[in-house]
Length: 196
Image (cartoon, rainbow, N blue to C red; front, top):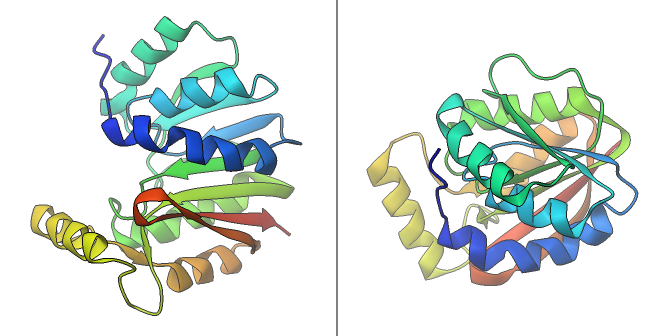
């Protein structure tokens, strides 16, 4: 099994961890949507042993997640679920949901489907944290984000940096109230919602 490596994961893990430690302090179970390489799962689970970390992604990413999981040998990292946000979701409920760098990769309809799914599987009082670049008032927060957005759209027409306000409307529709909007390094944000 190939253990894929993401430099972005390596760079952003500590700033994200600083917020998740507080946001997930009362949680016991977390569903990670789009576990990617698997790096975040093992890094966060090792440093927050009170959490049962449920990885998930499209089937093609499972070998890397399993390879990172096998090397880390942590009892609180669970094998990945095959999760396509527009398809069948696990039953839950989960105390928390985490997703990093997924909103700008998914099609807009998939972003909507992700929040509908979070609304179903997150327990009342639970916290959802979404990390990545976001626009505000339809504007890029930096020239770097504008360049990144252009590169994404050149790669695939359905990709692009999303407006935080529009994403927030999806969250609100599914019973999620904004708790915090944290500025992060490299022009990223971490948005946290509570299930009401």
